[in-house]
Image (cartoon, rainbow, N blue to C red):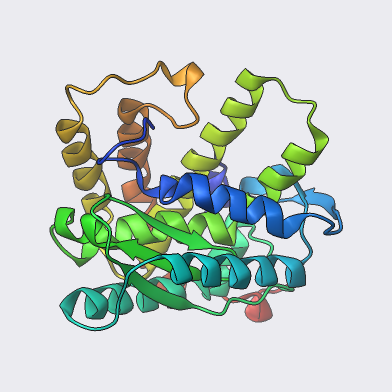
Length: 277
């Protein structure tokens, strides 16, 4: 896989976008939990862009644990059944793909000092949403499970959410919040960048987990059609890319992701330990 191919360039409602699950309460929980945490030095993040993080690896894991505990304590958790089986099945494959070292290296994920304690929960809520907290704590709302048509579409959403955790986007947002020197439009631009980055990572992640990346494009086409009559802010005033831009980018990444997976399966991408220096 060529590193160059991975350089990364909602309105709230019943059909809210996946990353916005329990957005208000979750954001408040994260902000409260990170007060007093130390600053992490700046370095290169996904796509080799510069990334300032607010949390150390240990702090990030603890924040995820605490936030997950608080969310589950307030939610109606579905304990068993086909929905739980589906979320566990898909999430485990995504988590396994996240451990593939050549993929981590090409994306330039900073994971060597981080721990992920993967957990999966189904929450009884009719919103079309999901989330993944720092440390690998995944929650999927039943409204989303009613909307996706197959495991591949569910994988598209879960991989996107997991990508946020792998890229330490929550820690990065906290660091930006602390600096408080960004204007509103610049902050929205950063948020859109994170969303496209998670889409990009997610397409590769779901493909390496042997899901069909074309289903990510199909799912967003269906979501766009369901929101066709809804008012949407111009992209410059939104914290998410427009549906049209998102689908265009997702479609453009399908073949590179498939090519990378073929190269990996054929042994043309070696683990770091086998790379000649």
